[in-house]
Amino acid sequence: QVQLVESGGGLVQPGGSLRLSCAASGIRFRSYTTGWYRQAPGKQRELVALMTSSGSTNYADSVKGRFTISRDNAKNTAVLQMNSLKAEDTAVYLCNAVGWGTEYWGQGTQVTVSS
Image (cartoon, rainbow, N blue to C red; front, side):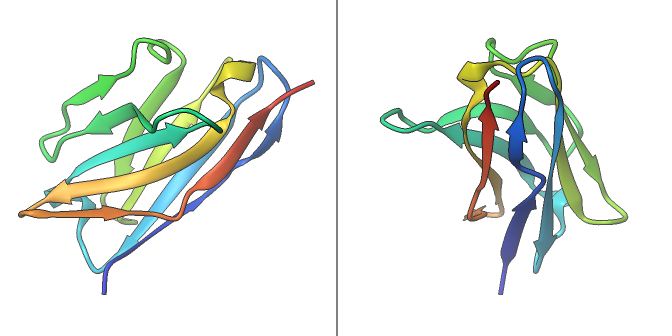
């Protein structure tokens, strides 16, 4: 059974940083395209960042230069480092893995940016 479990969300002040992690079981992240998405109340889910199995990355324009996606193959974990956070980054952040004709989602972790 495949599970993706996010952690690291919380409440942070504007300008602060958070580090989200997504631990996978049942699949090897290095063989999948791994993505972070977010969904704010009343808004559609949007792609934040993704990393292909070969290591290529892609970011939403709104987070370029502030967020970094990475992958720890030894720990089978995907990481989203978020710096210079803004109020508009507030959302539930979800981990995603796509590959081999399959797609998996984590349950999400709440990120709230507020003073």
